[in-house]
Image (cartoon, rainbow, N blue to C red):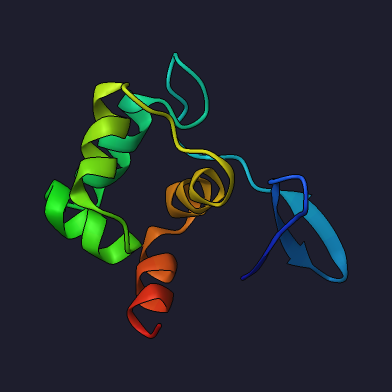
Length: 98
């Protein structure tokens, strides 16, 4: 599976030379990457907040703020969470090599 981040923040899957939108598997009531979605993604990956933050390369406070609804992921972080919702193992494997 090949994924591409578009300039407008959308993520598309490339198949046979065509682009297909990737829809996150989890959608929270507060939006695509609301606090419930971030918490659910982390829990589905069986990670603590500290482990999830380390894998994403962000401070643990960022994860806490997202999960508590104090802040919302924007831009690249929102796109990364959308990809994690679709293919978590692939994302974490790719991030481990960075």
